[in-house]
Image 1 (cartoon, rainbow, N blue to C red):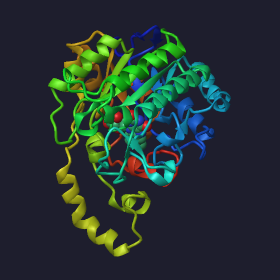
Image 2: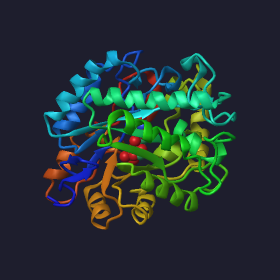
Image 3: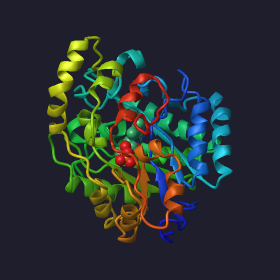
Length: 402
Ligand SMILES: Cc1cc2nc3c(=O)[nH]c(=O)nc-3n(C[C@H](O)[C@H](O)[C@H](O)COP(=O)(O)O)c2cc1C
């Protein structure tokens, strides 16, 4: 057993038993109001029993206006939910595992029929993927959202979560504010000339959460190391973002990639067009002919336009961040075997490693890593069926494991 991978470490004043993190993964296991169901609890209990050091939940909405298009998303928007989430966290803590709730507002990355109003954003440009025209958010509405993040974090704390992670990656609202490509605001939440970034919203959310929950309550953040929008981000703006997060003293920084405009670049790997055409509200079609014919040539075309899967595909961002901050850095994306993970930590490229799809495929993967005398390779083949089935209303699971 590798001592470093299974050595304890700290995020703020929270101690983790090892450096293996389950990255935020939409569960599809809540009711229409965002209350957790039995499957939600089961997913987390299984991971906790099997040696995961810290679980980060799937994104939970802070308000109905910030809901995702997936109908079974968790929500942490009212005190009535505390007792239901508390049952989950109590169970997890029995196994010495930590659980952090990811809290999010979708901004323009949702559907009007879900939020019952035009999605709010720092831009009026629709996202390429969601194709909904957002309404430009006012200063007062932005302040209201800061309050919602703080209140949600407080509810999460009351429900026994060990911390919260602000979702500022993958093109969701905090990420929209950060980037000049998606922030045209002229008020204090606009783009700062010095850094080229709109850091005021994530910064004020951080302050409000700490003020509401206490300084010692861990506030983590998930960011994207780069994106495929027209302007440049990496390395200059990326460095500025890390310096900003470092100055604020976020408790940990997880680094992923991209926005939903080019969704497959977040995940990388295969695409199942049949599932997309069957379940995704943006691309649904009943035409069998369309499904078969386009499936034949479209798939090749689509895949050729996205970045190919490679092991540890976001590690270079973590490596760069580590040179700019002493805050724990978590790398996520493409970690599939134990040797790879151990080297990333040994080489000081990241402090912790997070995985998503491999844990859907094998919820006992951390235990397998721990018990394997040598290397162990995840059975996940990046077919991404778990991703495309998020739109089906079913509980997130692996569709290709035999
Ligand atoms: C089914 C599924 C749901 C996901 N849901 C979320 C989410 O709620 N929040 C988030 O930040 N990332 C989400 N992700 C992205 C993962 O956290 C991770 O960044 C990405 O899958 C790359 O890691 P991997 O190669 O280990 O899967 C999701 C990924 C999958 C496969």
